[in-house]
Length: 202
Image (cartoon, rainbow, N blue to C red):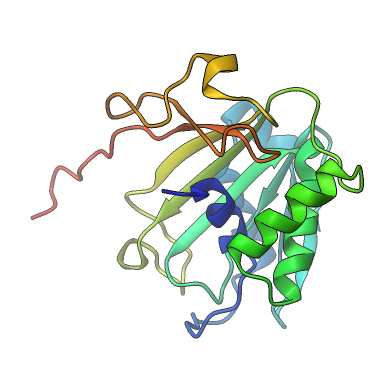
Protein backbone atom coordinates (compact mmCIF):
# COMPACT_ATOMS: atom_id res chain seq x y z
CA UNK A 1 0.00 0.00 0.00
CA UNK A 2 3.01 2.30 0.39
CA UNK A 3 2.85 5.32 -1.92
CA UNK A 4 -0.22 3.80 -3.62
CA UNK A 5 -1.51 7.10 -4.98
CA UNK A 6 1.93 7.93 -6.39
CA UNK A 7 2.04 4.63 -8.24
CA UNK A 8 -1.49 5.19 -9.53
CA UNK A 9 -0.43 8.55 -10.96
CA UNK A 10 2.74 7.16 -12.53
CA UNK A 11 0.79 4.28 -14.06
CA UNK A 12 -0.32 6.46 -16.95
CA UNK A 13 3.25 7.34 -17.94
CA UNK A 14 5.60 4.45 -17.19
CA UNK A 15 6.96 2.21 -19.92
CA UNK A 16 6.23 -1.51 -19.91
CA UNK A 17 6.60 -4.64 -21.97
CA UNK A 18 2.82 -4.84 -22.39
CA UNK A 19 1.44 -3.53 -25.64
CA UNK A 20 -2.24 -3.07 -26.38
CA UNK A 21 -3.78 -2.55 -29.80
CA UNK A 22 -3.59 0.70 -31.72
CA UNK A 23 -4.28 3.99 -29.98
CA UNK A 24 -7.98 4.71 -29.64
CA UNK A 25 -9.43 7.74 -31.44
CA UNK A 26 -9.24 11.11 -29.64
CA UNK A 27 -13.02 11.13 -29.14
CA UNK A 28 -12.98 7.71 -27.47
CA UNK A 29 -9.96 8.60 -25.35
CA UNK A 30 -11.71 11.75 -24.17
CA UNK A 31 -14.94 9.89 -23.40
CA UNK A 32 -13.09 7.28 -21.36
CA UNK A 33 -10.84 9.77 -19.56
CA UNK A 34 -13.90 11.69 -18.40
CA UNK A 35 -15.22 8.60 -16.59
CA UNK A 36 -12.83 9.58 -13.81
CA UNK A 37 -14.30 13.08 -13.40
CA UNK A 38 -17.41 14.11 -11.45
CA UNK A 39 -20.34 14.27 -13.88
CA UNK A 40 -20.94 17.99 -13.39
CA UNK A 41 -17.29 18.73 -14.31
CA UNK A 42 -16.94 16.60 -17.45
CA UNK A 43 -18.11 19.08 -20.08
CA UNK A 44 -15.29 21.55 -19.41
CA UNK A 45 -12.39 19.44 -18.14
CA UNK A 46 -9.11 19.44 -20.09
CA UNK A 47 -8.08 16.04 -21.42
CA UNK A 48 -4.61 14.70 -22.22
CA UNK A 49 -4.13 11.49 -24.15
CA UNK A 50 -2.04 9.91 -26.88
CA UNK A 51 -1.36 10.57 -30.56
CA UNK A 52 -1.29 7.70 -33.09
CA UNK A 53 2.47 7.57 -32.42
CA UNK A 54 1.70 7.26 -28.68
CA UNK A 55 3.05 10.71 -27.81
CA UNK A 56 1.42 12.24 -24.72
CA UNK A 57 -0.55 15.23 -25.97
CA UNK A 58 -3.43 17.63 -25.23
CA UNK A 59 -6.63 16.23 -26.75
CA UNK A 60 -9.05 18.89 -25.50
CA UNK A 61 -8.59 22.27 -23.88
CA UNK A 62 -10.38 22.81 -20.60
CA UNK A 63 -12.56 25.52 -19.16
CA UNK A 64 -12.68 24.51 -15.51
CA UNK A 65 -10.29 23.42 -12.77
CA UNK A 66 -9.92 19.74 -13.75
CA UNK A 67 -7.36 17.95 -15.93
CA UNK A 68 -8.11 14.40 -17.07
CA UNK A 69 -5.71 11.76 -18.37
CA UNK A 70 -6.59 9.10 -20.92
CA UNK A 71 -5.57 5.46 -20.58
CA UNK A 72 -1.99 4.65 -21.53
CA UNK A 73 -2.17 2.30 -24.56
CA UNK A 74 1.08 0.62 -23.50
CA UNK A 75 -0.21 -0.36 -20.07
CA UNK A 76 -1.92 -3.61 -19.16
CA UNK A 77 -5.49 -3.07 -18.00
CA UNK A 78 -7.35 0.24 -17.91
CA UNK A 79 -6.73 3.35 -15.82
CA UNK A 80 -7.81 6.96 -16.34
CA UNK A 81 -7.48 9.85 -13.91
CA UNK A 82 -8.61 13.39 -13.26
CA UNK A 83 -7.04 15.93 -10.91
CA UNK A 84 -7.27 19.58 -9.85
CA UNK A 85 -5.17 21.90 -12.00
CA UNK A 86 -3.18 23.08 -8.95
CA UNK A 87 -1.67 19.59 -8.84
CA UNK A 88 -0.37 19.89 -12.40
CA UNK A 89 3.20 21.04 -11.55
CA UNK A 90 3.49 18.01 -9.24
CA UNK A 91 2.05 15.67 -11.88
CA UNK A 92 4.13 17.12 -14.71
CA UNK A 93 7.30 16.75 -12.69
CA UNK A 94 6.41 13.11 -12.11
CA UNK A 95 5.92 12.57 -15.84
CA UNK A 96 9.26 14.19 -16.59
CA UNK A 97 11.09 12.05 -14.03
CA UNK A 98 9.49 8.87 -15.32
CA UNK A 99 10.70 9.75 -18.82
CA UNK A 100 14.18 10.00 -17.32
CA UNK A 101 13.87 6.42 -16.12
CA UNK A 102 13.21 7.13 -12.43
CA UNK A 103 11.19 4.58 -10.47
CA UNK A 104 8.40 5.34 -8.00
CA UNK A 105 10.61 5.67 -4.93
CA UNK A 106 13.08 7.91 -6.77
CA UNK A 107 10.28 10.15 -8.04
CA UNK A 108 8.90 10.50 -4.52
CA UNK A 109 12.28 11.40 -3.01
CA UNK A 110 13.16 13.90 -5.75
CA UNK A 111 9.83 15.69 -5.55
CA UNK A 112 10.00 15.76 -1.75
CA UNK A 113 13.39 17.46 -1.91
CA UNK A 114 12.31 19.91 -4.61
CA UNK A 115 9.21 20.93 -2.66
CA UNK A 116 11.33 21.55 0.44
CA UNK A 117 13.76 23.64 -1.61
CA UNK A 118 10.94 25.69 -3.13
CA UNK A 119 11.65 24.41 -6.65
CA UNK A 120 8.32 22.59 -6.96
CA UNK A 121 5.00 23.99 -5.82
CA UNK A 122 2.18 22.05 -4.19
CA UNK A 123 -1.40 23.23 -3.67
CA UNK A 124 -1.99 25.33 -0.57
CA UNK A 125 -5.47 23.81 -0.16
CA UNK A 126 -6.74 20.21 -0.28
CA UNK A 127 -6.78 19.05 -3.93
CA UNK A 128 -8.40 15.96 -5.36
CA UNK A 129 -7.31 13.20 -7.72
CA UNK A 130 -9.87 10.69 -9.04
CA UNK A 131 -8.81 7.37 -10.58
CA UNK A 132 -11.13 5.08 -12.56
CA UNK A 133 -9.75 1.65 -13.39
CA UNK A 134 -10.63 -1.84 -14.62
CA UNK A 135 -8.81 -5.11 -15.18
CA UNK A 136 -7.50 -6.12 -18.60
CA UNK A 137 -10.35 -8.64 -18.92
CA UNK A 138 -12.89 -5.86 -18.47
CA UNK A 139 -11.41 -3.49 -21.04
CA UNK A 140 -11.84 -3.98 -24.79
CA UNK A 141 -8.77 -2.35 -26.33
CA UNK A 142 -10.37 -2.39 -29.79
CA UNK A 143 -13.66 -0.64 -29.01
CA UNK A 144 -12.78 1.09 -25.75
CA UNK A 145 -15.66 -0.56 -23.89
CA UNK A 146 -15.17 -0.79 -20.11
CA UNK A 147 -17.13 -2.81 -17.56
CA UNK A 148 -16.79 -3.31 -13.82
CA UNK A 149 -14.95 0.01 -13.45
CA UNK A 150 -13.75 1.11 -10.03
CA UNK A 151 -13.51 4.74 -8.89
CA UNK A 152 -11.25 5.80 -6.02
CA UNK A 153 -10.51 9.26 -4.64
CA UNK A 154 -7.29 10.80 -3.36
CA UNK A 155 -7.21 14.15 -1.56
CA UNK A 156 -3.75 15.70 -1.36
CA UNK A 157 -2.99 17.70 1.79
CA UNK A 158 0.78 18.34 1.74
CA UNK A 159 2.51 17.71 5.08
CA UNK A 160 -0.70 16.72 6.85
CA UNK A 161 -0.40 14.05 9.54
CA UNK A 162 -2.68 11.63 11.34
CA UNK A 163 -2.61 14.05 14.27
CA UNK A 164 -3.48 17.14 12.21
CA UNK A 165 -6.38 15.43 10.45
CA UNK A 166 -7.61 12.88 12.98
CA UNK A 167 -7.38 10.18 10.31
CA UNK A 168 -5.95 6.69 10.87
CA UNK A 169 -2.95 5.28 8.98
CA UNK A 170 -5.09 2.49 7.53
CA UNK A 171 -8.82 2.17 6.84
CA UNK A 172 -10.89 1.17 9.87
CA UNK A 173 -13.34 -0.60 7.55
CA UNK A 174 -13.90 -0.94 3.78
CA UNK A 175 -14.63 2.43 2.22
CA UNK A 176 -13.48 4.55 5.15
CA UNK A 177 -10.75 7.18 4.62
CA UNK A 178 -7.19 7.05 5.89
CA UNK A 179 -4.03 9.10 5.43
CA UNK A 180 -0.96 7.97 3.50
CA UNK A 181 2.56 9.41 3.36
CA UNK A 182 1.82 11.63 6.39
CA UNK A 183 4.20 14.49 7.07
CA UNK A 184 5.48 14.63 3.48
CA UNK A 185 4.74 16.70 0.39
CA UNK A 186 2.70 13.74 -0.86
CA UNK A 187 0.46 13.37 2.19
CA UNK A 188 -3.00 12.41 1.00
CA UNK A 189 -6.32 11.00 2.12
CA UNK A 190 -7.29 7.73 0.44
CA UNK A 191 -10.94 6.84 -0.13
CA UNK A 192 -11.44 3.40 -1.69
CA UNK A 193 -15.12 2.36 -1.86
CA UNK A 194 -15.90 -1.34 -1.29
CA UNK A 195 -15.65 -3.31 -4.53
CA UNK A 196 -19.04 -4.10 -6.01
CA UNK A 197 -19.14 -7.63 -7.43
CA UNK A 198 -20.80 -8.08 -10.79
CA UNK A 199 -24.18 -9.74 -10.14
CA UNK A 200 -24.04 -12.07 -13.14
CA UNK A 201 -20.39 -12.98 -12.82
CA UNK A 202 -19.80 -16.66 -12.15
